[in-house]
Length: 292
Image 1 (cartoon, one colour):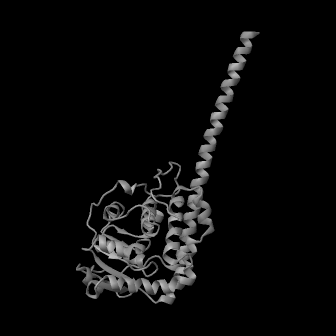
Image 2 (image 1 turned 45 degrees about the vertical axis):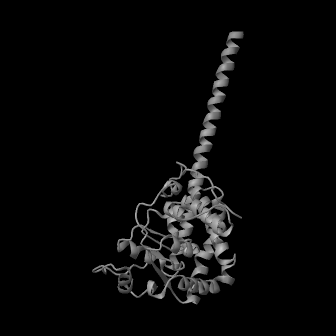
Image 3 (image 1 turned 30 degrees about the vertical axis):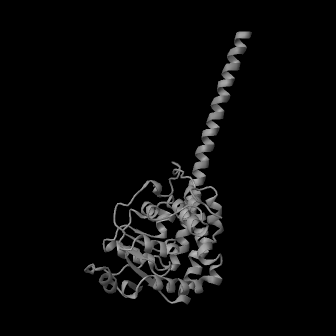
């Protein structure tokens, strides 16, 4: 099912338990050059890579977290991109990428990997790299994290009522369905193999860096032609053990948003009803006195 051109809705003022921004990317444009396309699949160290790229001056670096916990309205444009590529609805080219990613000098992680070919074509001047790892350990890690999140019944429930998760959950589910054929456990490993072969076919070997976490700054900096940061360890973030806890904490915060909105709206309705009842009572009482 295509979800193209879904309307933008502003963040409710009652969403006080989450710190999401509320930027309508459809109104944005490119303000910095796209310099790096880091097209390795998620759970290959992309969160650490994002931090590293920002440390090297490639700021901002787009990541799934950009849409999930930073600026949920981004999900509207990702849905436009999915609709154009996988459902043949609408178009999504350089102009649209510049709106969605125009504040970024780099991009990594999913859902961007679903558009590797399109991004390489849109930004031929950008350097291309992929993070890799053993396919079996990658699959096991992803099963415990993002596949769990894509199928999280609590997230699905919250998304029916909360602004941020209502934007994010359908986008994540759409990505998981189109990229992994709706069954990551069954299709994930072969998709991993096929995907990296596709990248190698799209980018000449001499223009592509295949990078594994643990190799440090040198190969990354050499490829990107930037100096190695002095006295700084390569970052390590987003471990598997903390992923589920962070997601559940996010669910709880969004539930609190929903509860607070219900309290405020419910309180306003109750106050309005009370005020109306008192007005009617005064009117009836006053009229009764006149008729007496």
